[in-house]
Amino acid sequence: MQHKCRVTVLEKKCFADYQEQYLADPHSGECPFYHVGDTFLFERYGDEDTFWLTGNGTQCGEAWDCISRYIYTALQGGSIMRNWTRDERIMIACCNDGTRPVIFKIERLDYKVVAAEGLEEGGRAEALRTALMQVKGVEEVQVRPEKGWIEVFTGLEEIPEDEDLAEAVRRQGFQVSRID
Picture 1 (cartoon, rainbow, N blue to C red):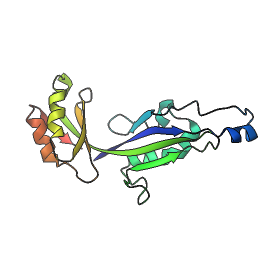
Picture 2 (cartoon, helix red, strand yellow):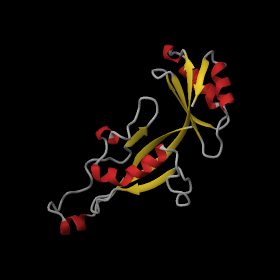
Picture 3 (cartoon, rainbow, N blue to C red):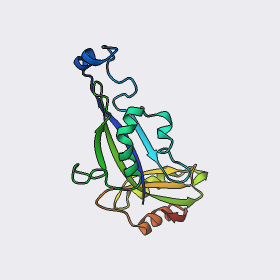
Picture 4 (cartoon, one colour):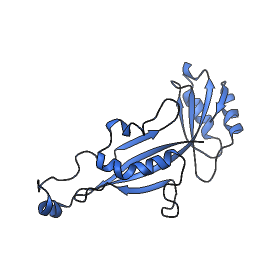
């Protein structure tokens, strides 16, 4: 099983009274770095490692100090916040700017990598996606022909069996080389 982490900006706050009282620029306003709905995906598989690059400059330093530990935990497959949130794969956190905090939803995404020969030739991604979505426990499918694999995202309660995934791919005319 592999893991990614999706970070979504849920909300931005601005406490103008605190800014007026304490800041050098009393009219700083809300955070200019993030926008509600922004989504960032972190991964550490194959040749990808966006975590150690601090999101390739996509993150504010103050926010990164607050959310990076949750992102790291998610990428390792750990429980982000056991017994705190309804789903241990999810955490709601915010940056530490007291006058203009940003609220984030941090999600661990669990997936299996199905490497298949011939994917890079393309052309049948939708058929593969449709076939794999029929497998019990599959929530989402991303065909990555440029990498030579398919990412099969799973739920928390039910994990698809490797043999069921392999069979669905074989029925579409591809040879499975490995499942991670």
